[in-house]
Image 1 (spheres, rainbow, N blue to C red):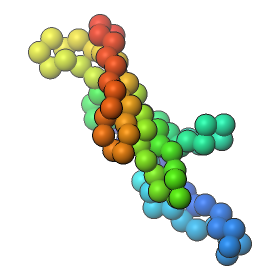
Image 2 (image 1 turned 120 degrees about the vertical axis):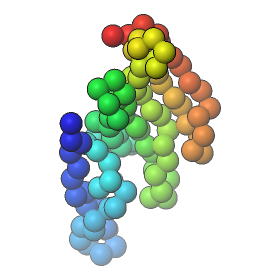
Image 3 (image 1 turned 90 degrees about the horizontal axis):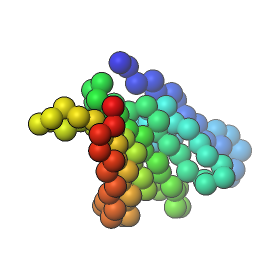
Image 4 (image 1 turned 135 degrees about the vertical axis):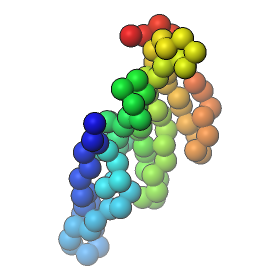
Length: 102
């Protein structure tokens, strides 16, 4: 399938106008969560089996990947599984896998 992308603009308080944001525009199906102050790219996929969503926080307008939730398949058995990867400074610091997911 085709991942939908959108041009995303942010309001620049100093200039009093909207400006394009290249990073947010590069995310597939971006979704903002005001409560957690995160942005999630919700419809990434490499195949029918491999799908994921990435969650980012921002510090000084710099995005940082904090979590990836996804599904994939074991190449040997073909069985599906879910995973959650937690990131800190661009590195996976915790990974949880749930096996046997269809």
